[in-house]
Length: 173
Image 1: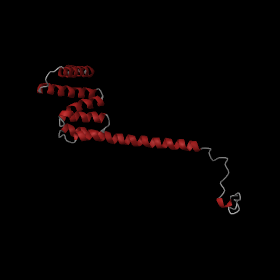
Image 2: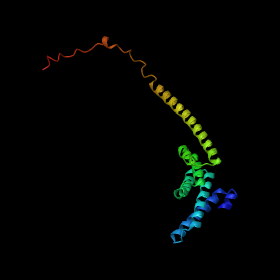
Image 3: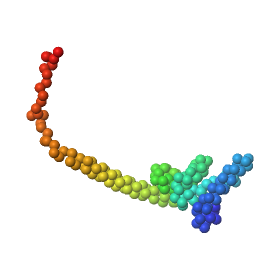
């Protein structure tokens, strides 16, 4: 997978890394021991997968690959950083900021700045869409009311309205 990635064939790299993970899992289920070297290799493949999925714009799969690593190593900087990138792709900005909050890397603060800028841009976009939706709704409501009161007599104030005489409740049997 790494050679394909180096040649910018991201889809092939992801395919090969997935095949390597499947082979690794099969070997473990066949009874192969999971030593330190196998654990490091597995972690490396998942982090590579995450990077590949990020390049392909598949934030959901990238995040899942990172979570596999974070499950056993919560403070893994590379996994946290890539998970934050995936969350940013998915517009899950709070989660991205939380993942970056404990990293003290220059790259992390740059990504945090980009995430905050994306969040502000998204909020502005949402605000514009909400205003447009309100305007559209108001126009529909106004159109629905058009002609509603035309050709209707003016309302008569209650004190001048003619009322049918009410029966004297004392005389009703």
